[in-house]
Length: 296
Image 1 (spheres, one colour):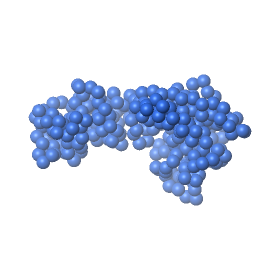
Image 2 (tube, one colour):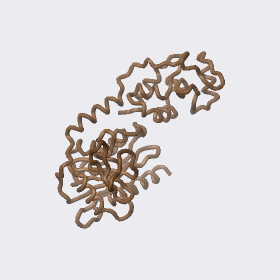
Image 3 (cartoon, one colour):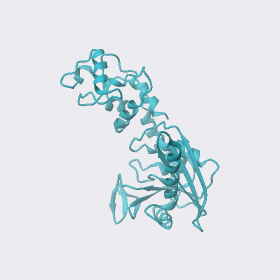
Image 4 (spheres, one colour):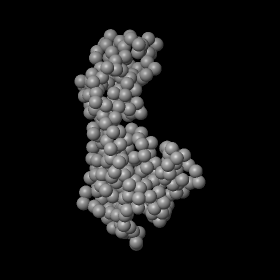
């Protein structure tokens, strides 16, 4: 999904003489959590016919604008909008009657359907372990690094790059990075994949490692640098009483698909050389090298 284009379609609906807010546009996309992403998307608006200056803060402040705040205020006044002490009266000017199919809601529903195919039972061989990560610049740069499980030596490296069509939105990382990961996995058949992101340790119990694992019917492990959700007790992470992951040093390991919490943790621990398991660390290094080389 191209969330940029979905956002522009919504903002184009704001009529002259009315304004909307970042939050209202996010709601029209299907989730208020996307409010900050809406601001980023509009700051990159390439279309003259998309009146991004008509989107303001929910407290009535006019907010930022790529052309400058003074230019935004001028355009709003030309539309007939009154600005008093830097604020706009939303009771008078707010527009939120958008025609929308709530694309983010559709994505949540899709994940709920895929979630039914998830397995937390150990169902894997341990021959090769791959790590995948994505770095961002003007484009998205994905890296795949595969290790032989016995010798723990690298046997394959791969890099891809592509246009970014989905900004960072909390809890929707899968839809930002899946297009890159899908390209990376073409022609590859590792036993297990470690992904920079969460597995079960996710508000919907379906992070990127789960999503990718189900799509490809493969064992996956999520490796997260921060605990953004859940409660920790005796190194284990719980969500609503369900054990979903385990801390390993300063990182959090959670099963993605076809693997248990304990097995995911043991495999991650086996590949710990520094602060992050080597498959993910090497993929992280490779992705950032590709970005630096391409955008210098």
